Image 1 (cartoon, rainbow, N blue to C red):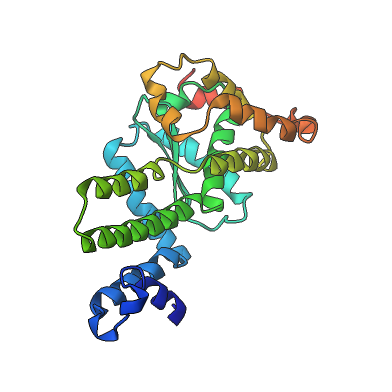
Image 2: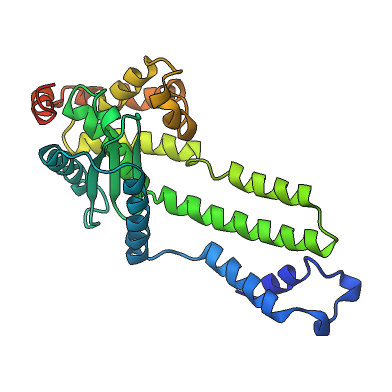
Length: 278
């Protein structure tokens, strides 16, 4: 952290005409600079994996894995096969089906991917499963969650600085609450552009692994047909862009670029057998 940043940080609450080194709270200044460093620090791969493991544990605390070992092995085989065709094949990829009727899928840094039984039940073949898993794998490849966490750290830093400034001027509880609400507003789900990017990467990655690239669009079309008032879709709507927009943006990529790959297998019979004769 260079001296210029330190001067800028310190000048937030000290008027230029009254700048006096003797009046600076150095402990507080050092802590502020440390926060700036943390908010901009790169995360190593071991740290990414450890962080992802913690997030995955939290997800499993909210919804445990479905008690169906053969199905879990099947989803892991599909997911790991797709991950092998990515630029990060050596991550300790782990895939799981959550015992949750909600329709959703999640990824955590370091190679943890989950799909709910509610979403799995809406699928028709392995290519659709591959498309969804490839979308989530793409979030990990592009480190979308890590970037969102770094943005959150920067927002926390700005909220802390704003809160300090408010307190130094007598304090205004209403303003403090507005700062807090603004911070939370930007922490709801990933950025829409991250979702669109993972859609684009996901169809290409699924095709690279040998699947019909239209698997993901088919899932989006299925979900598009569900009543929006269905409570099982509530979290999906909260954390993802609308299905119409996602399909619209995928259109130019799918045709004509991937039309020749539409005949790749969808493996519907293997999928049905894995799901117990669906």
